[in-house]
Amino acid sequence: MNTTTFQPIAPRPAPVNTEGPVAWVRANLLADWKTSLATLLIGAVLLWLVPQILNWAIVKAVWAADYEACRADGVGACWGVITEKYRIIIFGRYPYEEQWRPLIATLLLTSLLVLRGADLTRLMVTLGVAMMLFELANKMTWLTGGVDGLQGMEVKPVLGLFRFDMVGKTAFWYALVVLFLLFWAARKLVHSPFGLGLKGIRLNVARMPALGAPVNMRLAAVYTIGAAYAGVAGALMAQTTQFVALDVLSFNRSAELLLILVLGGSGSLYGALIGTVVFMSAHHVLSDMNPEYWQFWLGALLLAIVLFARDGVMGGLRRVGARLGLGAKA
Image (cartoon, rainbow, N blue to C red; front, side, top):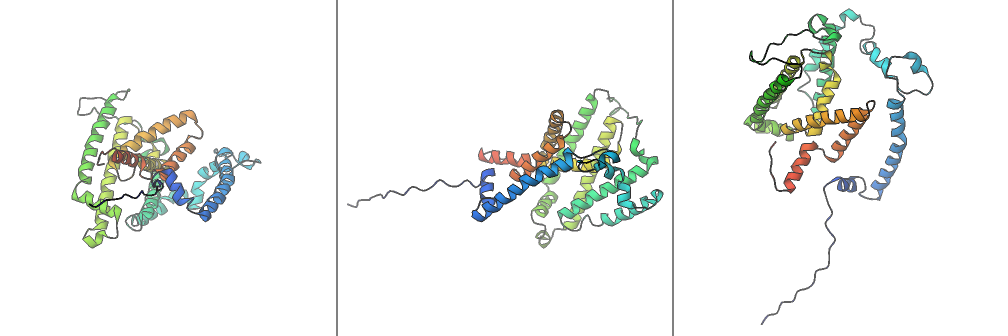
């Protein structure tokens, strides 16, 4: 009769967690003694340098175009002078009446670069084009109203039945219906063969031409669709507010859209909706708590999400759903 003897297994340490902020810090900042020492030195330098930069750039900065205040002792950056003299910084002594010529020439040249280069290049070119369009709109007062914007628009009732009221009830339901239709169309597009091709381009743009996918044509098509969606959004805002300000082409508006995508999660339809809710909620709450420096705290929130939740809020919800055994497509 055979007998089986079991040998006890020596206890082994618990597996190291490979996810989350603590694991990221351990793997990237405290991997060995050299990395830990470099982290401590860089952290000490940042603790000494960052408060001084914030003190110079924000706390003691002069935001108004006050030259006497800028010359005073102990003041920081003089941002007001830059905003007042930006034309001289950009155009130099070029005649004011003819500044539209270099703007249009630069716009035409840079628009050819949108489909060239990497994602960062496209992003910077797009922002540059938006800034040039802002200046063109500022000069074409006969068309855009200039700094005063388009005023006195008369918007007829929706379908001839629902008038826009002061409360905004009609505008809310009208915008919600348009949002639902556009979201439905975008979802159909994402899950179509064209959308799958775009996902492949996002994951590995160098391999897609080997599969026979026309990368540049699809990028041009999706940029055109995105521009059409932006046009619908602008038309909705004009209809619901009956006013179009010049800041619709400003850099701040483009930056807000990028913040919304980062907060919600880029590459996700639901992430764009969630990011909008998070951004607007944070905007109102932080501006009520600290009206002067609410953008600083919003930037801190953005940095935290980029460092510890790179997929945004939607990515965090996906991970929670995966741990709970739930599946979701967005």
